[in-house]
Length: 345
Image (cartoon, rainbow, N blue to C red; front, side, top):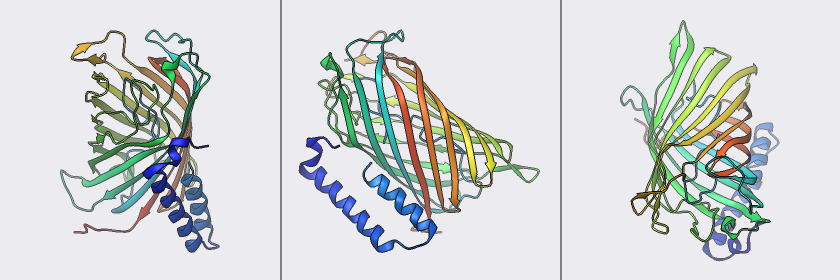
């Protein structure tokens, strides 16, 4: 399953150590309780399992990974959160600026993992509670096959970019004792630690340059069981030292209409939309017709296993792509809260 280059050198040793450590942890920790069985299965799945690839345009983006009640918990709990994402992407279709299919491309498939740590404090700042996010994406598998044009080749799997950023989570606004609105603002900085082989390889797990992705996310409740959620990113990219290309600014919108079908179970109509509104530049000069666009739509589900553990899943089919691939995007994540307070006030 893994490319040969992934099984050599320090990256292989690091991933091998992490997997063995997690397996040993599960063996020692395992018990007959239903909750621990569920978590054990989830972690074992994730050990051998991200963010979508980067080419010469926009960096890797959050394409629908944060949908469903994304504005925040109605009962925010300070402490440490472990967010873990698994993402599978496949495409046999690359589109040009006009949305027409480009010949010479065969297929691309990739499997990613994104372990993420979040700290939520209990301090008050600007009326909200500040926190901090840190994560690094990993590509467990990515391969481009059947190409008749070598420009669509893929670099091997490997480590992705590292992201960190502070945020403020505001408590829910209530109306007649019921939740009405909850939101959060975060400013993420992305460091190019990821594998990138541009311009030789079209698909890369890392961007190859610094980029900023501040976002505002919110959930609006029409009823306690019916809500609309969204997350809006502004994407600013630095210049790649490998290609001298600077991707144009863009907006990335995640959205979902969420409905509670029974206690602890939510289903959603989810989507994401990426729109680049400035052309890329090379050596300071604009490159015409290089703006990207894509729309992804599909179902999502959220299950509150307990007050401290949640499971989420999404399926997306893409359309309206311009200057990028168009395909299928499936994702799974869990959220696990630990009552740990290293900065307790």
